[in-house]
Structures are given as structure tokens and as C-alpha cells.
Image 1 (cartoon, rainbow, N blue to C red):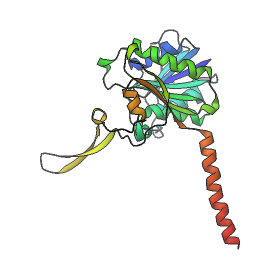
Image 2 (image 1 turned 180 degrees about the vertical axis):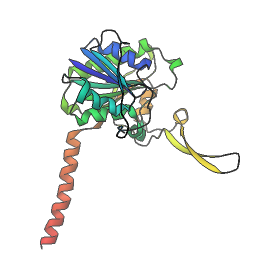
Image 3 (image 1 turned 30 degrees about the vertical axis):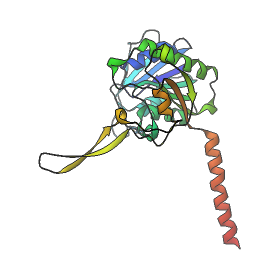
Image 4 (image 1 turned 30 degrees about the horizontal axis):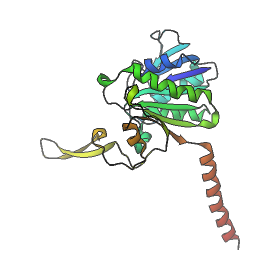
Length: 262
């Protein structure tokens, strides 16, 4: 089995190393990551400047590793189109610091890598950790949790799996409650604009991370379950969903054609 590891926290992120060490139990692991953090940049590629790729020898036992001065989406494109000659079975993005929750998944560089993978019809999962600080993370415990998820996904790998967002709780074994497959709660918004005044009294706006201030949730919110100690697995896009939507829109226009022909 051939697996690609990428992320948006940069190639030297401890989460990348933890993911590589876990996935090496399941097959050959390739690594392609940005050379620095590119979090919350959504899904851009780099069209107007050259991308420099550097081979890395930082991770023992991997089939190949590279870093580049581009985005997380660039990483997947270059991996699939140029750097890796073998067909990939699965692409994992992570383990990223900070959960991918609510509507903010659409800003997430981690989720963007998985979306890019789905464009090549490769099953993919974004994996994030519910912690805002590396100082409070024990990656030995994180690897134990991630192993359970990876084992199931790789056993049942299929192109129809599409794209998944996985969030891991930052808990030890006795606090871990299990795994819940649940839609992302789009009522949750982690990043919000706040107004501030500069020394001259002019108002300007900046985006503030309000993760620690989130309080009110629906009882079945994925983030509430994550805080309670569950791993949450959320399908982000599925091909059969788009097929149903396509059929619905086709019916709209067929109705219009019927009305205009009378």
C-alpha cells in the first residue's frame, strides 16, 4: 500500500512525524509538505512564481520525502503529477494542530489537501488535533488514537470514500470515549472578524480565533463530541451526494423546457 502524507503546518511539524510513524505500520509512506506553515489558506495553488522542491532525509524509512515553497494544494498536485511515479492508495493530511470544525473547514489548508486528492480520485482524510498549543500535546497518545482511525480507513479504502475530516481529541486513553461518524456542525464558526481602534481612533478589522470562547452547541454537534473525548469522522463531500444534486437541478431545467415549449 502506498500512502502520501502532507499537511499545512510545515514539514517539521511534530504532527507530521507522528502521522508518518503511525502509517509506516500499513505500507510505504511518501511525504510532500510545505517548507513552512500555510494554515487557514484554503485551497490556493501557486501560479505566478516558481516552486522550488527540496528532497528531505529527515524521516527514516520513508519511500521518499520532499518539501516545497508552496501551498498544501501545491504539495498534492506535485506529488501526484511529478514526484511520485507510483499510484497512491490513500492521502492523509496532518496531524494538524487545531481542530477543523464548522464552516471554517472551507478555510482550512489541511482540508484543502484532501479536496485536492479527491480531484485525482484518490481517497483522502484530513486529520486534526483538538489542541491550540504543542506544549500540551503528548504525541505518543495521539498516535495511539490515530492508529485506530487509519487502520479502519486503510482496510476499507475505496475511491468512493471521497473526502473525510477527522478530528482527534487531545486526551489520554482513560478519557477517550470512542469514534463518532457525524456531519460537521455548520453552525460553529471558529474565526470571526472583530473591530479594533488604532491609536488615531480609526477602526480596523482582524480575524480572531475564538476556539476557546465557543460554548453553545447542538447536543449532537461534532465539536461538542470532540470536546467530550470522542474522535469525530465527518464526510465532507461524497460523489453520490453530487449525483443527487445534479439530478435535482436537471429536473428544474426540464421543467423550464416543458413550460417554454407549450
